[in-house]
Length: 542
Image (cartoon, rainbow, N blue to C red; front, side, top):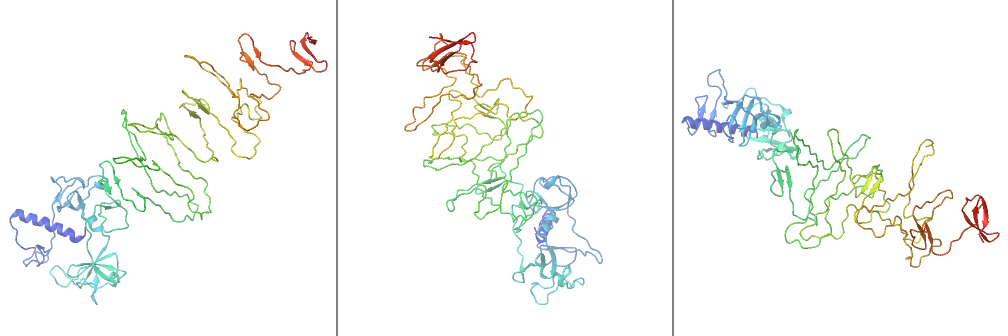
């Protein structure tokens, strides 16, 4: 709102006062015995007596805030007062000064005038483009229409794009730098936006940040609980965006740390003491759904969130130390977080005849990728007891497949490789009671288990045309190792409880040295005799 518009508010207010007193005339002059200006409904003159001057004294009212009509009963557009109070907080605060009402709030006149951010310059011509026109910061005529002796000429006030130029007839002009001429000023209509951080109407300002206290809807109605709601159903070049954010930053030319962000979502919340709330605080909520009737076609994919990142341009030759597809930085600087999930994937909801052919929690493509977990890893359990624990119900706990799929040669192929024990060479005083390479603990607390295998090795016969030169079921290296089986052992036959060892087929016994224990049996390859060890000597058995 400019000064001219403000004076119109004053005139409207005074007219209302005159209507109430019954003294309304077609045109009125106050302050002088003179005819009013032909264009004025009310003409105020300050020199009501010789040598004496006065002004317009508006109603003095103590406002409470810009948003409250109090002490008036309602907001009335055009109402003008002088506020005497200092009250309110933040953007709704009021301070002593002139205020007008726009129908929904009080607006301080000083701010309304300043919103144009221009200096007023007066000229002695109706059109400042007139040759020989003079310019000064005071009007060329006084209130009686006489020449103002204080008006001179200041060439420094000419041709400035930030000034308002007032013609002698009251017309308003601005200077256009591109045409090198003064053009008539048209006051912008009131907008729904303020200049950022103020209560000034943004008007025609195209560069200053803008804001508004109410909600905003783009492409549709706004929601009562959404500060910004964007709706779009228009495809352009086969693409439809709700919000498209492109952040292009200048070239970084120094070593100072700089962060470039396209979207920043910050959500703060509090819960009063003694309150247990079922609410949640969410920084970002994303929903991508097929919904509505007549939705029977096939769609290639749906992505709740799709992140494309990295080096996009082929011309890029620089180095990036780390590239994160998703970077999470949890904080618990105070209070208690009972359970903290960096990534939590809920189970799929399948209802009303919906079907899912294949369900995947997480799929990581790329056979060369390394997946690293610094903490413990649990499959089927939320509290793994070791670095990795697998708990399965009604299924195999762990299945390992290691295949050769190319014609290249490799030295070894392991289905599973386990390293365990004391790794460091300087653990001279460390003690471990028992070290297990593989520990199997079967359970049969209830029900019936027909056959239980602690370790089962398949025959490996289904190798088609492949050949295994040496095929070992179980191979235990190390001549100093003791291999202990508490139960029965069957070789080529199902073991029975009446014998510790049951063999179906022949047993080859080699030639052992003289250090064998009593009770040992050997085949002497020199004498070709079976011998038994008794009383420290070998005795022929036949």
